[in-house]
Length: 187
Image (cartoon, rainbow, N blue to C red; front, side):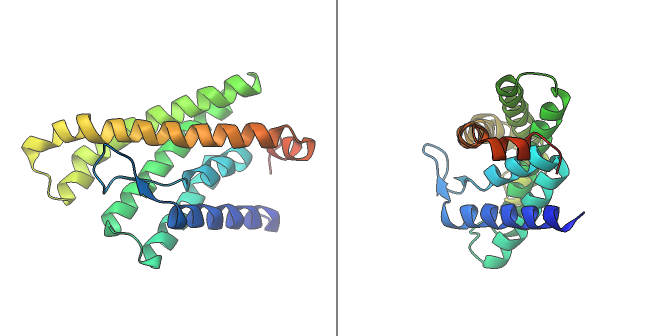
């Protein structure tokens, strides 16, 4: 990886961490421990420019820095769940964006957002059912109801908000020729 790529990833990782650190809030009517933060947006931009691995690296750096900051009220389990959520979004988004390379840009981006939201919601339903909620002490008889009525809707809302923010920013940036050439070629 050349210096330009490392600097780009470093900047996006720092942005992701700062967005998570400074802008984190619960979304009513969900339980207050489920919080939204826009830290996934820079990871989606890394995915657009350099692929899903770059987006996953941004997610990892963001999660580690957030955990080390001591701000996490959910501890290592919550930070790990946030990391898995973000990587699920980035992988689904990145796969679809690359698979639709010949499609019009708006359609390509929209389908990638949809695939990212679906992969995030599905993988986190499994992750919450089998790993994260049991670690939080949710009993076996409550798991399925909790996943279906709380975590699935929350992750759909989170994915929709994140992809809308990303889409608006991307549309605003892509209209500039220098930014368009940056994102439409491989770094």
